[in-house]
Length: 442
Image (cartoon, helix red, strand yellow):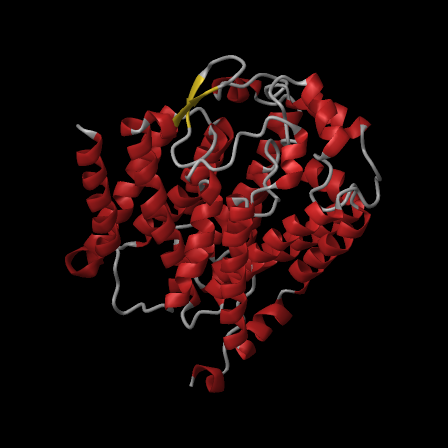
């Protein structure tokens, strides 16, 4: 199929998916397009990368400079989001007051900018982290938060998943890549690497899988058949991308998250806290044991990885040897900068720019204080997820899946980072949305 024809076909497919999923009864604010744009950019490529106006990162100094175009776009979206929250003052204030642990963690991240070797770079990165929070608040302060979350994930997924297939099949110069050192081919789709394509499939695939299971057979004759076809198609495309891509961590997390969503589809089980705690604990214990305690090494090998997790364990040892401050870290997202980054690039041919472990990444950047605050957010957030699961199983099971997936994903990848899609999904999962008063509803 010629490229032009394929582009029209896939463009029509994206439009058809949006129309099939359309629900006139679940109205959301037009302001939702702001977080849709933010999430779509963060999940795929920055604007400068789409238009190829930023050269590839060939030296550590380029990480310090950044892209003025990307800074302008993200700052504009952040400002627009802030304006929306100011217009929703009472509702936004209620959500902020209910989510103190997240704000405390964000505040500590801001303070840590002061002891960074590159405070200007750290502050720019912190504003992106602030943007994640603002976008989540724009979604959750909508008059219909549940519908807003569904629209956010659906609109972004309907765009990025089919577009990934289009780029891989018909625009190989954009959708495929090669390792510059080993010339090993891999698929990227809308992302910049195979891991990026993996978490795009992970987050949006789980959202569509949840919507498929949510659609009851009794609704097929009315409006349920449209969303069922739309999200079923997206799940099928996600599975195809997983089959083609080599992203073991995302695939394993998708199987874990999908299993949780399936099990929690049983209403009686979802409303039993003891069963939820037991299942969640078993999944986390099995994941940690498999990766770090040599329990079930065959599972790791079956995923195409070895006992060193593709060299990650050696990287962790080297990063710990270069710890800046065990209590406060190097400053917000500042460890992988300057001389330290240059040293790692001399040692490793694949040029790491993260610890490939989210918890270690937090320790390197924010020290033990940051790890404690993140642990507080996770413990507090898990309680919130359980509360939503008992009150609204349909929304709660996706929240639980996102929470567990984030916890497991960060064992081998660093995703507790600004603008990372897994981090944004985690925030959507744990953030409390207080019930509006009658006066606010009016």
